[in-house]
Length: 559
Image (cartoon, rainbow, N blue to C red):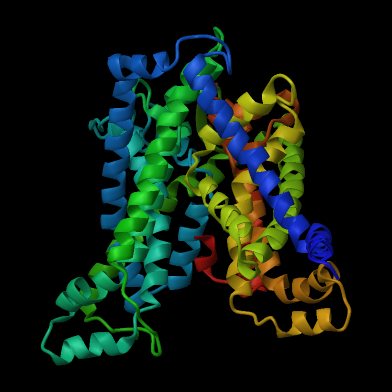
């Protein structure tokens, strides 16, 4: 056979190889749904016409020279940094006390933490208004005693809500980090004369720095990207994310150029924070092998009472908004006020609830199926194949982690909402944004499990003449079933409560539960918002309960 024939034969085999087709397809998906929208966003921010002829960089110059704009950036970074510090100071000791000591009711504590984690971020904002607002329940109690509480509105309320909502990130990641520390390390420190408190601060804490830093990163990025909470409880306190939303959906005509520019600034901050955190953690990571996890310790009666009081005070404060929403959904409302009379009228009169619920279930189901199928294929390419294309796909799959929901929503709207696609407000555009935002989670889940599974069974199947594609579906997928099912449940739960990107892209026909809650809150219909919010919490929580109860998973899978 000639050299030319050999080369032609190799090219033909490459061209028709199943996994090469999957690799090219995955690359096309990321280019179309990730790179292209972000590129259009960049162009729109510079030209003001998504490619037209306005002055390049004019919007950026205006942002950094007008106090009205750059003040939002200062507010966002300051609040997010403060929330990160507070959530870490509260969440890290909480995780350590629950993981290491004989605190009663640990199952209840973890259940409440998970419940707080799966609830939509902005729900806590209007729940605290019900409690501490101008006509709030707790505010009324203190008013009857002649006492006036500080206002919950403004920066105080934003920091409070963000901190309590972000606690689960720190709790879950620190708890997972503590399980990687071997008991022999603590024993050695105690034998050298260190006191328990000194062991925790100087020996154990440095070993869980990667987990703690990841939790802090998630807190910072989440609070920086959330605009629902500041818009509900912040009143005149403006942050960058809420300014992006306001500029894009302004009732007098949106300003895509300004919204795009602000989105790019937010994207640079989140990506820069992610890269800095990864570099910082890499220098402070320790290689360790866990043979015997840290043992449970008993406290003295006084110390146990103090630790229990701290744990339950923090956990109940974090979960109180959820309880408030559920309880208030069963109370009668008189205008914006909620009375103490029990009723089911709120559910019977929630006329827009069935439509929003149907949309949420439909969109979440379709997006989850696509994420699981795509994640299985792309995850296999990332885990089993080597080469530049597989490396590029792996790199692309990391980008959505750092892209805020509002930024991704505006990028997709700019790219596909207008000409030549005109998909604005459709089911298709919402599925697009859900798919590209959640696909990386499925990819990481599948590639992680494949790293623990050998290739012998697959190789045997191929050697027996079964094509690679058929081998994957008949041999590999059954082995991945637990990971795929767990990923599907978690993906469904997170998509069902997705708000930041949905509110940018939805229309009246595609309104979902989170959008309906937000709309009711802005209209002052707190009773209706509680009804829809309770249904949303249930829809988000059911898959998590199935995941824990029937898939034998714990809360580590949430992060």
